[in-house]
Amino acid sequence: MSASDSDTTRAAEIGDVPQQWVVAPLSLFISRVTYGFTNPMPTTDEGPFLVTAKDVHDGRIDYSTARRTSWDAYRNAVTDKSRPRVGDILLTKDGSIGRVAVCDRPGVCINQSVALIQPNERTDSRFLKYLLEAPHYQDRMEGDSDGTTIKHIYITRVDKMQVAVPPLEEQRAIAHILGTLDDKIELNRRMSETLEAMARTLFKSWFVDFDPVRAKAEGRDPGLPKPLADLFPARLVDSELGEIPEGWEVGTLESLASIQGGKQLPTEECERQGPYPVYGANGIMGFAERTTHGGFVIAFGRVGAYCGSVHWTYGGAWINNNASSVVPARWPEFVLQAMLTVGFEGMRTGSAQPFIPSSSLASMGVIRPGEAVLDSFCSIAAPLRRREQAAIVESRTLAALRDTLLPKLISGELRVKDAERFLKERGL
Image (cartoon, rainbow, N blue to C red; front, side, top):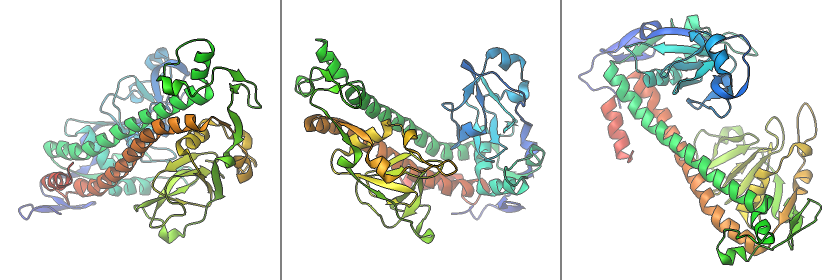
């Protein structure tokens, strides 16, 4: 879909764009471009967020990874160039370059790895974020960067970059279309985090802290329906893993699941989209038309920097050779949560290239409750996990749609009305 026949076009570096768009250096659309502080800042438990390049990803600021600093340092140790305002654009300029986010709250400061771009009255903040994320402008910043081991973007080159910008009303319409997709992705992310937390909390209560058992032992109400409460014993006994509920056992992971090394997928079969995820040590590395495992499978990162990572799916997957597959014989949600709860640091061997042998994973200690307790846990956890996966899969679809629309809208190849009709046809 392209501009209507009534539109005339003009040439720009990004290609032919609608005549009414302004083609000019980025500096025309911003009031400031600078970068953050270079001096050390104290770390505190509370206070303003100290955002670095590692905290900017997926189009947003991840405040869960950002450190905090003191209000005194925020006010006195840095200047305004390190204190973005709400609506300012943050652009990672060192290392993993080109990641973009809009500052969405006050009380944020940035270090030298992050550039601050302040839109002026000609420019909508969210539109400018999407413009900088478009492949053409990402390629341009990559081409203008220096460094071999560590890449650097020079901000004096960024503001000279030629951009093509529509009128403000159209900017806002484009940002609204793309933002609607991103808002739904963010909603799904938060819902997934909530569902994950619910499953984790239940597992910890029943199988780590033994809350129902301790309550019964102390003569308190365990807070569960009586048929469920009756499944838990009323005392703890010693075991090789410490105190465990009476009648429960200490087993190993291999008594609950089949563990195998992964298999290399031919490079030409790994695609950006497809029916089945391809799992490596660090998660999904692509998609394939075939699987190594159908149904529920856990992918365990067994080598490299992500050694000990745990990923999972209900719909089948290809498990690549830097991961191991863990396929539960029964109680998949229990096995998954047990693996997510265990720390694998003690199993690692090697220094330059960390590695966890399958034998070490297989011998991982697992507390084995009675089957009725396991059945009950999984009957609660399975709907949570399935809803979580549905949200994740939907977000992948939405992200793929956004990534398809973004360069077309930013270049004017696809106009707003066409994009709105396209999304309406898909119920969005």
